[in-house]
Length: 185
Image 1 (tube, one colour):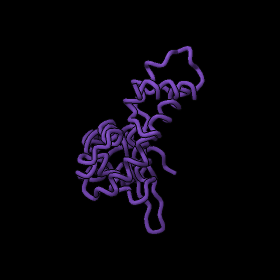
Image 2: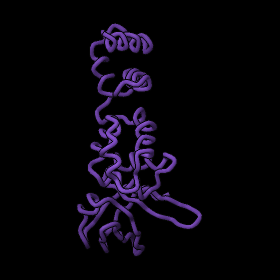
Image 3: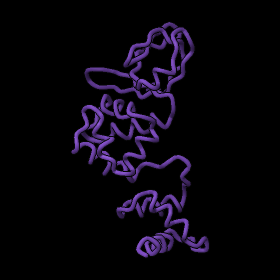
Image 4: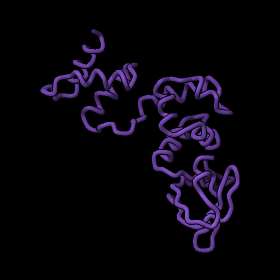
């Protein structure tokens, strides 16, 4: 597996870059925003996803680990291939795409070529509970938010309700119950 590439940019096209590492040129597919940050004959560093299939081996490059992780979550969904996932990341930042998924924004997601309403709904359904927004805490509070999201509340609603749960309540199931009480009032 090739997890990252550091080397000299040889060629830039609208859809991929060739990065030379010790005499070997690697063709790496990337989003326009990633490619826009690269310059010919300058050093580049990209996190990569190495896709190996029966008929091909392709590299996909990302400037941040967050972009790579979201790409991998997207291609893990049946019906979403690497080209569609890359196109989805091209509509804006990973954060904007995550927000669209968390908010169930079908208009934004279906604006991506190759993504119809059915696939968009599937993406929202499968990723809504998995996406951890930047700055979210881990541990018990993350479990509470995940539990509330799985019950149909948005991540934002869950976080607001969690803020009103007294800190003396430490058991996860008790915190979920109290948050539910806050959400129903």
